[in-house]
Image (cartoon, rainbow, N blue to C red):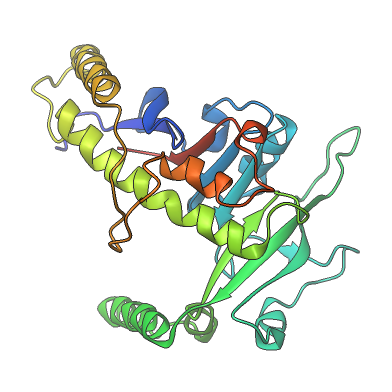
Length: 275
Protein backbone atom coordinates (compact mmCIF):
# COMPACT_ATOMS: atom_id res chain seq x y z
CA UNK A 1 0.00 0.00 0.00
CA UNK A 2 0.94 3.68 -0.20
CA UNK A 3 1.91 3.74 3.48
CA UNK A 4 4.35 0.87 3.16
CA UNK A 5 7.79 0.47 1.66
CA UNK A 6 7.99 -1.47 -1.57
CA UNK A 7 10.66 -4.15 -1.46
CA UNK A 8 12.62 -5.69 -4.30
CA UNK A 9 14.04 -9.16 -4.11
CA UNK A 10 16.84 -9.69 -6.61
CA UNK A 11 17.16 -13.40 -7.31
CA UNK A 12 19.55 -15.77 -9.04
CA UNK A 13 18.10 -19.20 -9.82
CA UNK A 14 20.34 -22.14 -10.73
CA UNK A 15 18.64 -24.21 -13.40
CA UNK A 16 21.06 -27.10 -12.89
CA UNK A 17 20.02 -27.63 -9.27
CA UNK A 18 16.53 -26.11 -9.62
CA UNK A 19 17.14 -23.91 -6.59
CA UNK A 20 17.53 -20.25 -5.73
CA UNK A 21 21.26 -19.70 -5.20
CA UNK A 22 21.56 -15.93 -4.77
CA UNK A 23 19.35 -13.35 -3.08
CA UNK A 24 19.56 -9.65 -2.34
CA UNK A 25 16.81 -7.65 -0.67
CA UNK A 26 16.54 -3.91 -1.31
CA UNK A 27 13.93 -1.20 -1.01
CA UNK A 28 12.32 0.41 -4.06
CA UNK A 29 15.50 2.40 -4.73
CA UNK A 30 17.52 -0.75 -5.37
CA UNK A 31 17.96 -0.80 -9.15
CA UNK A 32 17.53 -4.05 -11.04
CA UNK A 33 20.75 -5.09 -12.76
CA UNK A 34 22.91 -8.14 -13.35
CA UNK A 35 25.72 -6.72 -11.24
CA UNK A 36 23.79 -7.66 -8.09
CA UNK A 37 24.69 -11.32 -8.67
CA UNK A 38 28.10 -12.96 -8.82
CA UNK A 39 29.31 -15.18 -11.64
CA UNK A 40 32.13 -17.62 -12.20
CA UNK A 41 33.83 -18.71 -15.43
CA UNK A 42 31.64 -21.22 -17.26
CA UNK A 43 28.31 -19.84 -16.01
CA UNK A 44 25.58 -19.17 -18.55
CA UNK A 45 23.26 -16.35 -17.54
CA UNK A 46 19.72 -16.19 -18.94
CA UNK A 47 17.95 -12.85 -18.65
CA UNK A 48 14.93 -11.15 -20.18
CA UNK A 49 14.95 -8.01 -22.33
CA UNK A 50 15.00 -5.65 -19.33
CA UNK A 51 18.67 -6.55 -18.88
CA UNK A 52 19.64 -5.94 -22.52
CA UNK A 53 21.87 -3.02 -21.52
CA UNK A 54 25.64 -2.65 -21.91
CA UNK A 55 26.13 -1.91 -18.20
CA UNK A 56 24.47 -5.26 -17.40
CA UNK A 57 26.13 -7.37 -20.08
CA UNK A 58 29.73 -6.21 -19.73
CA UNK A 59 30.17 -7.37 -16.07
CA UNK A 60 29.05 -10.89 -17.00
CA UNK A 61 31.75 -11.05 -19.68
CA UNK A 62 34.34 -9.55 -17.34
CA UNK A 63 33.59 -12.33 -14.82
CA UNK A 64 34.39 -14.98 -17.44
CA UNK A 65 30.75 -16.04 -17.80
CA UNK A 66 28.46 -15.99 -20.82
CA UNK A 67 24.88 -14.85 -21.30
CA UNK A 68 21.77 -15.25 -23.40
CA UNK A 69 19.52 -12.22 -23.17
CA UNK A 70 16.37 -11.39 -25.05
CA UNK A 71 16.33 -8.04 -26.78
CA UNK A 72 13.94 -5.79 -28.66
CA UNK A 73 14.41 -3.78 -31.82
CA UNK A 74 15.13 -0.62 -29.81
CA UNK A 75 16.66 -2.08 -26.63
CA UNK A 76 20.26 -1.48 -27.65
CA UNK A 77 22.11 0.50 -30.27
CA UNK A 78 23.62 -2.20 -32.46
CA UNK A 79 26.48 -1.65 -34.89
CA UNK A 80 28.22 -3.73 -37.48
CA UNK A 81 31.45 -5.26 -36.23
CA UNK A 82 33.40 -2.51 -38.03
CA UNK A 83 31.51 0.16 -36.10
CA UNK A 84 29.20 1.18 -38.94
CA UNK A 85 25.43 1.46 -38.30
CA UNK A 86 23.54 -1.84 -38.31
CA UNK A 87 20.16 -2.03 -40.06
CA UNK A 88 18.24 -4.60 -38.03
CA UNK A 89 15.16 -4.64 -40.23
CA UNK A 90 17.21 -5.10 -43.39
CA UNK A 91 18.87 -8.08 -41.70
CA UNK A 92 15.48 -9.50 -40.70
CA UNK A 93 14.14 -9.12 -44.24
CA UNK A 94 17.23 -10.80 -45.68
CA UNK A 95 16.97 -13.87 -43.45
CA UNK A 96 15.70 -16.76 -45.54
CA UNK A 97 15.69 -19.54 -42.95
CA UNK A 98 13.48 -19.63 -39.86
CA UNK A 99 16.56 -19.40 -37.65
CA UNK A 100 19.73 -17.45 -38.28
CA UNK A 101 22.33 -15.19 -36.76
CA UNK A 102 24.49 -12.18 -37.45
CA UNK A 103 27.47 -10.82 -35.58
CA UNK A 104 26.94 -7.35 -34.11
CA UNK A 105 28.72 -4.86 -31.93
CA UNK A 106 26.97 -3.18 -29.00
CA UNK A 107 27.41 0.58 -28.74
CA UNK A 108 28.54 1.31 -25.18
CA UNK A 109 28.85 5.09 -25.32
CA UNK A 110 31.89 6.54 -23.60
CA UNK A 111 34.73 4.04 -23.21
CA UNK A 112 36.86 3.84 -20.13
CA UNK A 113 40.59 4.35 -19.66
CA UNK A 114 42.14 2.15 -20.83
CA UNK A 115 39.41 1.50 -23.42
CA UNK A 116 37.69 -1.87 -23.21
CA UNK A 117 37.48 -4.21 -26.21
CA UNK A 118 34.29 -3.80 -28.26
CA UNK A 119 31.36 -5.89 -27.05
CA UNK A 120 30.90 -8.12 -30.11
CA UNK A 121 28.00 -10.55 -29.79
CA UNK A 122 25.84 -12.92 -31.79
CA UNK A 123 22.33 -11.77 -32.61
CA UNK A 124 20.19 -14.91 -32.86
CA UNK A 125 16.98 -14.48 -34.86
CA UNK A 126 14.03 -16.85 -35.07
CA UNK A 127 11.01 -16.12 -37.20
CA UNK A 128 7.88 -16.90 -35.20
CA UNK A 129 5.08 -19.09 -36.46
CA UNK A 130 2.30 -17.01 -38.07
CA UNK A 131 -0.06 -17.65 -35.15
CA UNK A 132 2.54 -16.54 -32.59
CA UNK A 133 3.40 -13.42 -34.58
CA UNK A 134 -0.25 -12.49 -34.99
CA UNK A 135 -0.94 -12.95 -31.28
CA UNK A 136 1.95 -10.63 -30.36
CA UNK A 137 0.87 -8.03 -32.91
CA UNK A 138 -2.67 -8.11 -31.56
CA UNK A 139 -1.32 -7.62 -28.05
CA UNK A 140 0.62 -4.55 -29.20
CA UNK A 141 -2.41 -3.15 -31.04
CA UNK A 142 -4.62 -3.65 -28.00
CA UNK A 143 -2.10 -1.95 -25.71
CA UNK A 144 -1.79 0.98 -28.13
CA UNK A 145 -5.56 1.42 -28.36
CA UNK A 146 -5.75 1.45 -24.58
CA UNK A 147 -3.32 4.38 -24.54
CA UNK A 148 -5.10 6.12 -27.41
CA UNK A 149 -2.08 5.77 -29.70
CA UNK A 150 -0.97 3.92 -32.80
CA UNK A 151 1.73 1.27 -32.44
CA UNK A 152 5.11 1.88 -34.00
CA UNK A 153 5.24 -0.04 -37.32
CA UNK A 154 8.70 -1.26 -36.35
CA UNK A 155 7.28 -2.85 -33.21
CA UNK A 156 4.70 -4.69 -35.29
CA UNK A 157 7.40 -5.94 -37.65
CA UNK A 158 9.73 -6.98 -34.82
CA UNK A 159 6.83 -8.88 -33.23
CA UNK A 160 7.32 -11.50 -35.94
CA UNK A 161 10.70 -12.49 -34.51
CA UNK A 162 12.46 -13.70 -31.38
CA UNK A 163 15.71 -11.77 -30.91
CA UNK A 164 18.44 -13.03 -28.58
CA UNK A 165 21.91 -11.69 -27.90
CA UNK A 166 24.57 -14.10 -26.71
CA UNK A 167 28.27 -14.25 -25.99
CA UNK A 168 28.41 -18.04 -26.33
CA UNK A 169 30.81 -19.31 -29.02
CA UNK A 170 29.53 -20.28 -32.45
CA UNK A 171 31.71 -23.39 -32.56
CA UNK A 172 29.83 -25.12 -29.73
CA UNK A 173 26.42 -23.41 -29.69
CA UNK A 174 24.39 -23.25 -32.89
CA UNK A 175 21.42 -20.85 -33.09
CA UNK A 176 19.06 -23.75 -32.34
CA UNK A 177 21.03 -24.50 -29.15
CA UNK A 178 20.80 -20.88 -28.00
CA UNK A 179 17.06 -20.79 -28.60
CA UNK A 180 16.60 -24.12 -26.80
CA UNK A 181 18.55 -22.91 -23.77
CA UNK A 182 16.57 -19.70 -23.54
CA UNK A 183 13.31 -21.62 -23.58
CA UNK A 184 14.28 -23.00 -20.16
CA UNK A 185 13.39 -19.60 -18.73
CA UNK A 186 9.90 -20.98 -18.11
CA UNK A 187 11.47 -22.73 -15.12
CA UNK A 188 12.31 -19.44 -13.43
CA UNK A 189 8.74 -18.23 -13.86
CA UNK A 190 7.37 -21.37 -12.20
CA UNK A 191 10.06 -21.24 -9.53
CA UNK A 192 9.27 -17.64 -8.65
CA UNK A 193 5.58 -18.37 -8.32
CA UNK A 194 6.38 -21.29 -6.04
CA UNK A 195 8.96 -19.33 -4.05
CA UNK A 196 6.63 -16.35 -3.66
CA UNK A 197 3.91 -18.67 -2.37
CA UNK A 198 6.27 -20.43 0.07
CA UNK A 199 7.57 -17.13 1.43
CA UNK A 200 4.16 -15.48 1.63
CA UNK A 201 5.40 -12.37 -0.16
CA UNK A 202 2.02 -11.07 -1.28
CA UNK A 203 1.57 -9.03 1.89
CA UNK A 204 3.49 -8.05 5.00
CA UNK A 205 2.00 -7.45 8.46
CA UNK A 206 4.72 -4.94 9.38
CA UNK A 207 4.69 -1.34 8.17
CA UNK A 208 7.96 -0.06 9.62
CA UNK A 209 10.92 -0.76 7.30
CA UNK A 210 13.01 -2.40 10.03
CA UNK A 211 10.24 -4.79 11.04
CA UNK A 212 9.25 -5.46 7.43
CA UNK A 213 12.84 -6.35 6.54
CA UNK A 214 13.12 -8.72 9.51
CA UNK A 215 9.82 -10.35 8.55
CA UNK A 216 10.95 -10.76 4.95
CA UNK A 217 14.25 -12.35 5.94
CA UNK A 218 12.47 -14.81 8.23
CA UNK A 219 10.06 -15.81 5.47
CA UNK A 220 12.86 -16.10 2.93
CA UNK A 221 14.80 -18.45 5.20
CA UNK A 222 11.76 -20.70 5.51
CA UNK A 223 11.20 -20.64 1.74
CA UNK A 224 14.84 -21.47 0.99
CA UNK A 225 14.82 -24.41 3.41
CA UNK A 226 11.60 -25.68 1.82
CA UNK A 227 13.18 -25.35 -1.64
CA UNK A 228 16.25 -27.31 -0.56
CA UNK A 229 14.12 -30.06 0.95
CA UNK A 230 12.00 -30.33 -2.18
CA UNK A 231 14.95 -30.20 -4.61
CA UNK A 232 12.73 -31.12 -7.53
CA UNK A 233 12.38 -29.90 -11.10
CA UNK A 234 8.92 -29.91 -12.76
CA UNK A 235 8.50 -32.89 -15.06
CA UNK A 236 7.20 -30.88 -18.00
CA UNK A 237 7.08 -27.34 -19.30
CA UNK A 238 3.86 -25.37 -19.89
CA UNK A 239 4.00 -26.55 -23.49
CA UNK A 240 3.43 -30.07 -22.25
CA UNK A 241 6.77 -31.54 -23.30
CA UNK A 242 7.92 -34.09 -20.78
CA UNK A 243 11.46 -34.62 -19.58
CA UNK A 244 11.88 -38.29 -20.38
CA UNK A 245 15.55 -38.30 -19.39
CA UNK A 246 14.72 -37.89 -15.71
CA UNK A 247 17.57 -35.37 -15.45
CA UNK A 248 17.50 -31.70 -14.60
CA UNK A 249 16.23 -30.07 -17.76
CA UNK A 250 19.11 -27.60 -17.87
CA UNK A 251 21.62 -30.46 -17.68
CA UNK A 252 19.82 -32.45 -20.35
CA UNK A 253 20.05 -29.52 -22.73
CA UNK A 254 23.85 -29.73 -22.59
CA UNK A 255 24.09 -33.49 -22.69
CA UNK A 256 21.72 -34.00 -25.62
CA UNK A 257 24.59 -32.94 -27.88
CA UNK A 258 27.96 -34.70 -27.52
CA UNK A 259 29.71 -31.35 -28.02
CA UNK A 260 28.06 -29.72 -25.02
CA UNK A 261 29.69 -31.22 -21.96
CA UNK A 262 28.19 -30.32 -18.62
CA UNK A 263 31.57 -29.84 -17.00
CA UNK A 264 32.24 -26.91 -19.30
CA UNK A 265 29.21 -25.06 -17.95
CA UNK A 266 28.88 -25.75 -14.21
CA UNK A 267 25.96 -23.41 -13.63
CA UNK A 268 23.10 -22.04 -15.69
CA UNK A 269 21.57 -19.07 -13.90
CA UNK A 270 18.28 -17.53 -14.86
CA UNK A 271 17.85 -14.01 -13.58
CA UNK A 272 14.83 -11.91 -12.74
CA UNK A 273 14.86 -8.62 -10.96
CA UNK A 274 11.99 -8.55 -8.54
CA UNK A 275 9.49 -10.63 -6.63
